[in-house]
Length: 234
Image 1 (cartoon, helix red, strand yellow):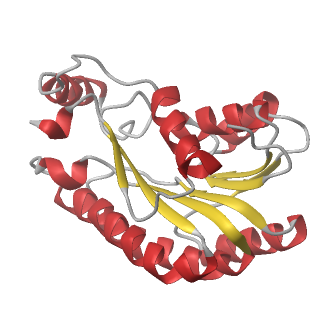
Image 2 (tube, rainbow, N blue to C red; image 1 turned 90 degrees about the vertical axis):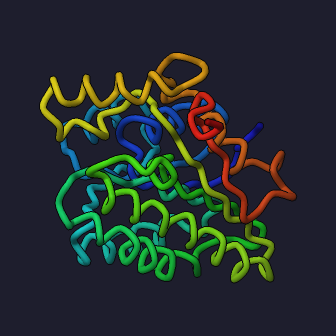
């Protein structure tokens, strides 16, 4: 999968799955724009990625940051790929913003997608797990899956493909809001349900996202790809 002379934007590209994907895309020759909201992660990502990479602070909850992102894309030029990967986990109602924010982002950025571009949206297996105390988070991720299907229909006339990455238990800092003991208990409970009996690596989930962004997936749109070690199979 070659990404030479392709311009790709990854929101939430400064850590975890997004950073793993950004590093692989950079090795394959892509020109990257990445966003994140943690200054430390952004600085570390800037050191790991080529100097030509545009690294931008962007907070999902701040409309001004979306305006700045659009301006950055406008200056960089049309996009060959867009990976909406930014996300967070919490037990508070702030997760209700996910659907609204991503819808606004897509509306703002769709004009910059080239004909034939690819879009990947990162959701979560939580949308299907039915786990206790995760209803708001799970609902926000289910909304992203629904948005993916709608966007796939809306953008098909421009030959733009839209697909959804559905990670299961993958090593990342997504659950860092939990105290260490609760996080360990939660992850062990999930792990007990995974047929492959291990936590996935960020690189493994990123590899599927790269496939969906590439021309190898030229006839794939409106689909969901689970990277969950078989969790949802049960």
